[in-house]
Image (cartoon, rainbow over the protein chains, first blue to last red):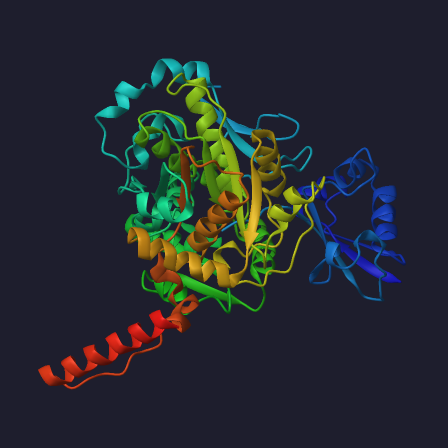
Length: 91
Length: 419
């Protein structure tokens, strides 16, 4: 499925300044793997040594945190947006 | 360090100087203000601060403030209230309420974190400040921005309690209502801070903001006579307050201002939004985020950024976390008001109600010294208890009418006693 990953400012130095990355993927996991294959320097910022998404990185599929959608295995539809956001909350 | 404090990554330890940033650009973990305690041991002392006014700025050397810092308006310095009648009802002794329900200027502990955040905002040259808020933070930002001549723009969930919205609007802050829950608002604010370069106190100023919470802990220790309690019960929304009270106690020990002793940290949440308590009770490696559904709106953060740190502190201290239902929250608000004359908001009801639960579980001992952290004023969440107090029927302004009323009330009471 053609989808877009939106890259936060903090990560853009690993994507040569690109604010978005378009790819074709069936699941969020596959989309993230395509992203880190294209930009290997981003790898260790997306996943920890155990291969899990890093604790302080939130991943959204459209408006929803993927942890409410079954995690990285959740399926993608055409035109979906995957958003990466460093975790910060409280107020 | 040329200053005795700087930002440091909580995971990888890398230093980042002082700047409006909240996460490490190497590993994207959160940053925290780190201090040169050896330097502070020489520069700060209990004697030095003893002559200062009793408010949060009394502890200036332990906060991220410049050496030529001059306090803006007073903040904090709230009562630590012995609560013997509440204690008796709960079957314990030595119970205290740290009463930030009367924190000034805006009647919640959020005044403390806004205090340090606005000092940082001015240092970094921001003329517009703001926040994402479940209510209390918006009130505090609006009030203190007005005091200090800064523009304020606050982002809130659209269905926040009317009192909290009014309590922000009155200071002439711009309020942006978002159709979503707090976690949606927070995500938007991360993007706003990125794009507009405003000083969002709990986003790009977060490390400086969170340091203000330590003063809640410092005051507790000083008010107990420079000693630490056995137990402290703290409400958890994002999880920052409990971790910063832990940091405060640890710093006081490092500085030699209090004797080291074990303190058990207990976290309190509403069952309708309890990701951290659930993580502690089920011994999870990572908490599972929740969709909040509780009257305790000020604690309604389903994805708490300091959740991992709160869980670790609780476990390492031998404490626990519990959660209670909305009905129990309301009962607890009434209990604290009826026994100690303190009217707290839903978050305070959560904390008092969880304290009761922990005592019943035997996790808090009858003879231990326990401090219950009351973080906000009941006037902010009157909607939550309104149904408990329906309007009574009015009587005529005549003595006979009052005598008849009194007779009927006594009859009702006698009937209830017999039943």
